[in-house]
Length: 278
Image (cartoon, rainbow, N blue to C red; front, side, top):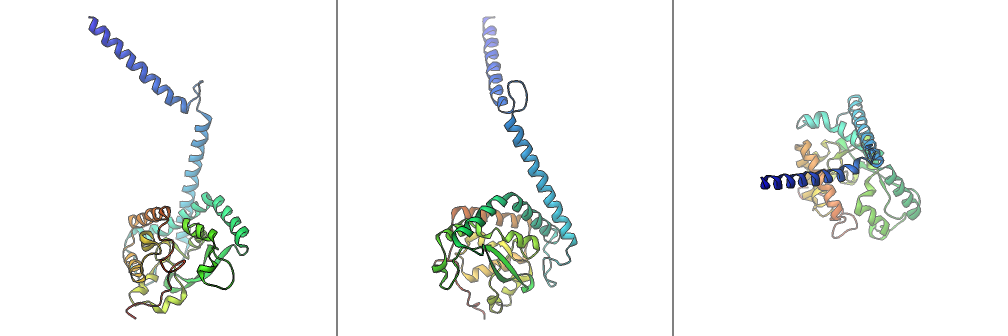
C-alpha cells in the first residue's frame, strides 16, 4: 500500500516537473495572459512574408520563361532531361529575383563602399561570350583602381575582400534575370579565348554561362585550365537539379573557406593561351 503511495507521489512529481518545463518553453511563444509573444508573432509574419515573396518570384520566373522566345541552349544541344528543359530557367529567374529583393541592403552598402573607396564607375562592365558564343555585357562590382598597371598593382585590399566573399559577383544576378546567364553553368570567360578552344571545349557555350560552375565549386581559381574546361564540358552533357544544387552548396562552402580566391601566379587567374590540342 505504502509502495503504491510512493509510486503515485513520484509520478505526480514527474508530471509537475514536465508541466513546468513545458510552461517554460511555452512562455517563449505566449505571454502570461495566454497571448502569442509579440516577438514570435513578428517572426511568424516575417517568415510568411518571405514565403509569399519567394512564391511570387518563382511564379514570375515561370511566366517569363514561357514568354521568352530564346532557349537556354544552342540548336544542336539536346537537353538532358525535364529539369534542364522546363525548370532551370524559371528557377534561375525566380531565385535571382528573390536574392535581389532579400540582398538589396547588402548590394546597396557594397555599391556605396565601392564609390567611396574606388570612385566611379561602381560597376565593372566587360564583354563576355555567352550562349552560342554570343557576346553580352557582364556586370560586377569594381575591385580594381582605374588606370594602367597589372591586376596585382590595381587590385586594392578592399577589392580583395570583395573577391574573397564573392560580393563582387552580386550584380550578375541582373545578368541572370536578363537571360544572359544562369545560376550554374560554365563561367563566362574572355572573348579573346573563343578561337583558342578545342572542338570539344567549344561545347561549353552550348548553354548559358553561370554565376558559379562545377569547377568553381571544387577549386575556384586553383584549377588548371584543361581541368576547368573539361569540367565545363562534363557539366553541359548532364545538367540535373541535384547536380546544380550540389554546385550551389559546394560554392557556398568554398567561399566561406576563402579557398582558391586567386591562382598561385596571378591576382585573379592565369591568362588562357590555348588548348594543348590546338
